[in-house]
Length: 157
Image (tube, rainbow, N blue to C red; front, top):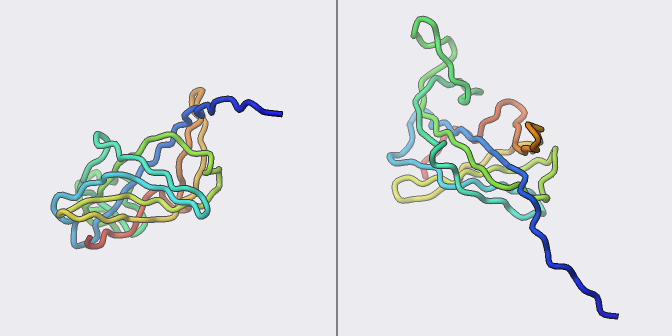
């Protein structure tokens, strides 16, 4: 007997918001560096890719430590805090709809695609997927074991 398959309905968008911070290392970033997109990888599942929000992405020079380049650190007297140094940090946000392939607790790879000096590269780091409930919405995002930050010091493209 023939069957009728109803048209596929699009799933509702569950917001996926991923922040990133990439530190330059002591040599600094190449001139004109910019973040273009973010890709999430899960073994055995499709990758998720979305453009980086240009209005929420920027390059700054700030105090960083070996384990923290996300926090905005200051001091009352304007002097460098002990254990911190000045370094460039490329920070931004990618926003999109989550995929049902990613579940809370999954270990994923997060890649930020960057361009500089006419060449492209990807900075990759591991992260754990989590969900946070907000005002009548379910927001999905990432948490690293130590800090919410991506990558190691930037290497040349």
